[in-house]
Length: 567
Image (cartoon, rainbow, N blue to C red):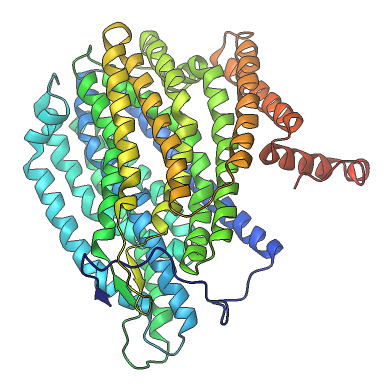
């Protein structure tokens, strides 16, 4: 493996290699079966991780409520909250899934040569480990300055500094877990990467349950550090087994199968940090509001993002397929997959958004209202959830679109690919789009803060992320992935109409019961049924297809030959 000079940048995509295909095309039913199994495993383990994460937040609320102590911990939580998208979920995956996908394509094309996967690991992993260690030490040493920067009005900065130094230990294992998980997903191995948040949250829960009396809120910070180490440990074995596959290959003459493009990682990291800056802005502005405001924003964000997380599971599974299609130069296959992902992710997140709009108060009461978390906290958190929910569809769509955007120019290229002179301004387009979104976030937040407080901050978040989503859809066209916008936007409009109707019906149904559990069940069931009915009636393929498939499964004789095909 070699490296490019900054002035010599590879063209965006390799030419399609039709004379000798990389691999035989999988039959559609086989691919659908693989995707269904992979999504099922990922969804099950991710749901378990999310449930444990929610239980973690419930224990935080029960033991510590929403006060200056939890505010201090949540400022320290900014470290793992920033490191996770940068090193596990977003930036590392955007960089390394396409890189490992290209290495696997080369492995299939050149079975007798040196293993490109092992070449890639040797060229990248040592530098990554050194950088992660340095970054972890810098955050720990600079914890007082970091706390003062993030939340200058914090009531207990000393506790926040202590927790920040503990959570700084997460940076190294998070980065290792993200790297290994990206490699495994590129190999179409999804079980171990999906399990990391299960062990992570189990560690936090264990420390909270056993040490909250002794350590106070510091027990959560210690649990975060311990859980991060377990995340990396879970992936070492599966990754080593995949790496051995290349060791058994016949050794040919040495050749540089891949060329490293170091500067390609800069816009990816910048985008992830700029996106995470929305949280920094909220906590900075929220630190000047009454104690507990940051905690209300945090609890609301955690509940709201469950719907977005479920939607992003789809592109987590399909991202390696998109990356391989782009590595092989097949723009049509990549476009078709991205369009399907946009529709399916929108269907999931809009159904979840309708539920949150309808049932936020009983959901918060059911989950959090016990111990130190009182009715006033419930009302404040539920109101923030409803405002946050306006931005959830945009959050999910950005997650779908940015993956293929950065995959077009991965961190490596083929050594035999011609090196052309090309402006890299488009590489920074997502960063610019996110920066404009932040300007909107700050503007709306500052304008609404004096009158609406935390609700104004949530409104700024929703407005800013929606602006970024609109800009990024345009950027995907500029990047060469020619989405059929009338088809995509038409599908989104049908799903949005179904979600609005479902939210209104669910709100009315939830008001029929005073008990939080019963109100949540009534409202949720009504939202699901109305969303399914309206989506089917409006012709939303992402809803109509599953509904008709369910009808056929429940009543095969009556359905056969009478219902139109929804595929």
